[in-house]
Amino acid sequence: MSRPDRLRDATMADVAERAGVSRMTVSRVINDGAKVREATRRAVLEAIRDLNFQPNLAARNLVTAGELRIGVVYSNPSAAFMSDFLVGVFEEATNAGARLILVRGENGAAPSLQELRPLLNGGVHGVVLAPPLGESAAVLDILRAANLPVAVVAAGRPPADAINVRIDDRQASQAMTRHLLDLGHRRIGFIVGNPNQTASAARLDGARAAVAAVEDAELVLAHGAFTYDSGLRAAEVLLDGERLPTAIFASNDDMAAAAVSVAHRRHLDVPGDLTIVGFDDTTVATTLWPPLTTIHQPVRQMAAVALDLLLRALRSPKPSAEVYADHVLDHVLIQRDSTAPPRRPDKRPSNV
Image (cartoon, rainbow, N blue to C red; front, side, top):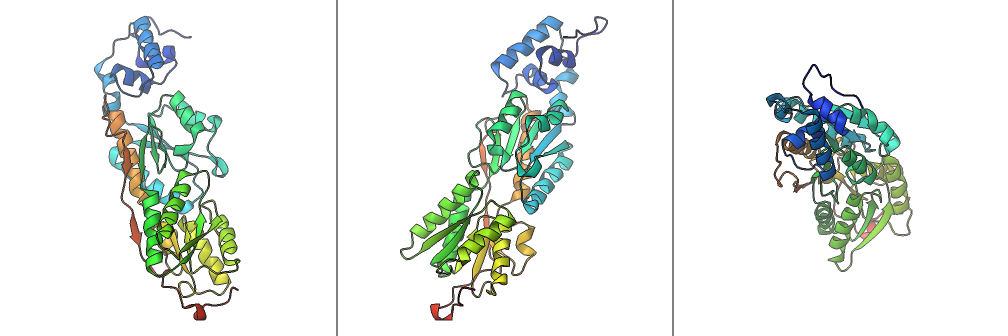
């Protein structure tokens, strides 16, 4: 391992090289910051002693005064969701003077260590993970090994050592299902999201809880993956059954838009013959006809809050426990033109 030039004082970079960590990790140890493993802390302190490193004011102010470089890692298949997410982090980064470095997983998969290596070697100070990567053990392990602070968005089971910003998916889904029941719907088709994401299970649980409270109501399931194509297949399954549901609740707007397309292809009027609702309130919800009744998940705000909390943690020598709490934002049920009470049985169209 190289040694610093004896004609100059040792620098933070020298300490980082000797300890095998990033300069940000050295800064956190110097400032007695949280979230540094004990073994890493010992290695940094040993390197400081070996090199006779004298932290100066500039080094101590690295986190609080310098431009912070933040990695944003994503692989969400919904272009509409990611558009809102990226607007949120870009706006917050602009306001806070942070620089963003984007990494996208290929084909909707979590990025590998090889794909993340340029980000890790680029000297980022922290990382924001878009859903569903906040639940990827492989990605989280890579970032932990690099001693990088992490903020995740919309993780149903957030890691204990990460900042998490989300809504209550179960409660939101329960509210939407109650809305359908209040309109008079008793046979509700439900398109489940990707089984690998906790949000899918939470939204299904919420719908089931609402239906269970009404004696003559039933929930008919079809499985999707939060993509438009999977929504097409799931809607076909629901509308090919012996009994047509009077409403379809899709676990996100992309799948709800697909259900509207299938209904139109079968000459079913939405909402006259079939009510369809979604979840997220992305741009998709207002760019099709009829515009969707949906759950407004404040994606842009969630992304901005996650980045803000991460920057606060990085700029504070001792981040408070409040920063690393589970931050649950409010959702809103948005009523538009895709919902109506069900028609009487004698007025229902035959299943086309």
